[in-house]
Length: 67
Image 1 (tube, rainbow, N blue to C red):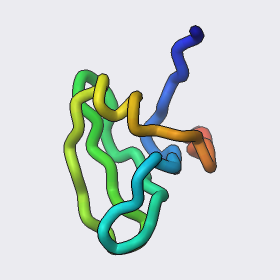
Image 2 (image 1 turned 180 degrees about the horizontal axis):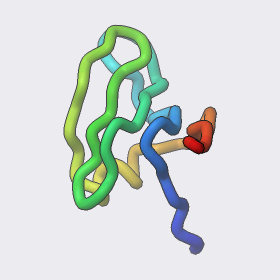
Image 3 (image 1 turned 180 degrees about the vertical axis):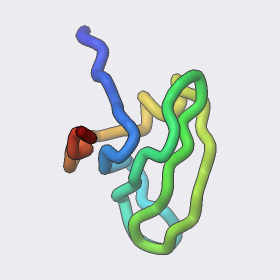
């Protein structure tokens, strides 16, 4: 199984929806922990990498490269 790389600014779809109804989250921080922001209501959450990787369904939009 290959390891997927995540970058700050990526939009990911999670398996379960947030209470506001949105399943899409923006990655704000990567590392041992991930900080993600709900695209529906703006709520921010910190998750350990293992829990984040289990909960992600797919990458909806890759971050645009910074020049």
